[in-house]
Length: 401
Image (cartoon, rainbow, N blue to C red; front, side, top):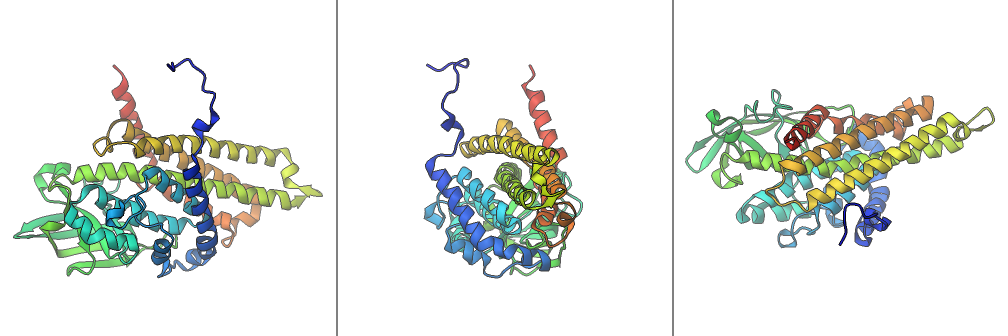
């Protein structure tokens, strides 16, 4: 019988198993060969290639966590996170839009919708003929997305009439399907929110504007408007007035899903820094030979390894969690903490990596410049760093007897 005082002697307990390592290696190769060559043009021109979702589908990277019954791959959240890590390393814009489609939209529908909705939407989301998005954030509802939500859905016979605006929506202007949250009971606050699947060709739906961003410029972001947009009542995901359950569990999975992307981006920062430090010469020697640079590289490596260890632990916890456990308790705290830590480390690493590159790192066309700009978003999306700290703080207060 193992006790808490027994030493852990098997280092393999802290490593990926053979299948997980294979998934990571294959996703890394796919991302390096297929996505990395697109990254600079996507960033420069704020361009999303029309055939990119078809490319994801051909290589088996859509519907990762959706069961084979609906056309998915039937993998776990942990394995999906490894793919996210690889894509983030080589093309963060592609990763962001892929994640919004596969995790925020398809996975939420798979976990929460009835079979009729799954049969109607998941096959297309899994084969790339449909592009998905999630509509939660509003102009006046960011960190207080639920309490300040102004989008409404009024019952009218067999339909709900949606009115409101969603902003900063990844894939917003290319999506065929949007999972939208709206208030169906104005008096009930966050307990009166309902989730709907909305087809973007529905009358009353429109894209108000495409938004230009500092980073992730190749990933399309838009403002969406619902103006007397009629959605069938049959398109409710979960239960009426219980959209908060879909939101909270979905946010936990979103946070832990994107945390490995920060690890992958940090890994790429280290690779670029090592390459530059070993080839850039000053005072007749490579700058890597100077202790100040050597120490910077050492600190970057240590931060990556510690972040990876915690992200993998939290990812494993969330992967094995039941539907009821997500959105509360330890799962809620660790998913927030993992993204909090990984993104903090990523931003620090990107800053040091630009410093190692010197003036070259400040140039727009440099890959390290793009990674530096991309790093910031993951400290804001899926709940800001402050929100994440608040989640962890509330969890800790609850552990005190």
